[in-house]
View 1 (tube, rainbow, N blue to C red):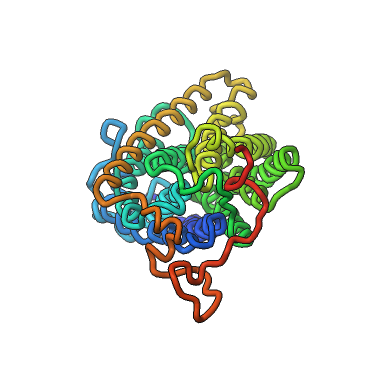
View 2: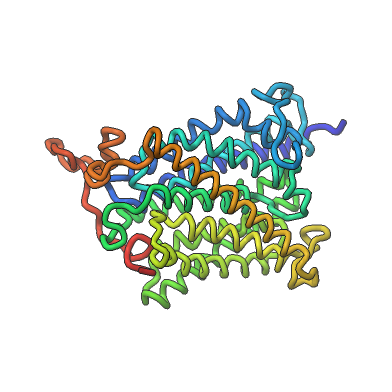
Length: 433
């Protein structure tokens, strides 16, 4: 039996900590994008995922995702409560299994939290608290098993290094489903709903970019050349995506916006996630530019089709995840994959169709189950706040708190809620309308 690698173990644990930081980063990114009267609720939705998911992961999440596979669909219950996972137990690479458990747990946390952006400012906290464990169990765990646990997508030969299907397409499809279940916010799309704090948005984007190196490079599960390649590709694809999004900003609005730069970075991070270890740095730049430009253009789809995706989870995570997943089939290089090549490298369409099947399957599965869960929750405990609570402010109605106390004597239903400052126009304004 090979010995555990101290260096690889240290890298995986460090990467897990970086990924955990991404959820508070996401909270600030989303929190800055909503109006002032909803920022605490947005932060709390991410923090609730931080509270619920680790408990479920230890009890039944890890075993259902990674304890073998039954029919290619779901794992077993042999490691319920991490039974049989000892201090010296080793994963399939020379790191402790506990390190792998922790690393995968933080992936599950951020995936659930991503969905919250689609229903910002109008979802009941109790409804969200019920949706998190149900969706995690019924959707995330099976999909993780399909892709990373030896399930049918793994057997199909589709590639997903760090979560294009498992994380981003999965969350994006669920976000679209919940946006349709909950309906439009009061006043959308006629009333401007500008980000209330763009410095929060940039802070969140920066934390996400920082943590994403653990997300992608950490998925090599070792301090090695593969992690180094994933690191460089993550860096350059994200930078290219910022430029791609800003180019669309300039063409459409004649200005490069702060919100556009932050959103472009996230789009690039999303798109390079499944591909970061399978493409060259040139391929990563191509993926980044395409993702930044296409995701920016797709922001306007919600106005055209009439669904209120509050913070553009569909345009960034669903579309970006699909772009990254499919472009593996175009620009994957055998120098990185070992054998699989994309269409542009002489591999034909063999890998491309496998990537397309994987993406389509996850979209359909996640959307259908999330839509059903949303309907059930809405009909039972309620998933949409009242119109009065939404207009007065979901922070006060759901948490009895407000983010900004402007005066010590303020009173009334809107006390402490600052008026949104003017901000560059993008997702929640008139772009794409």
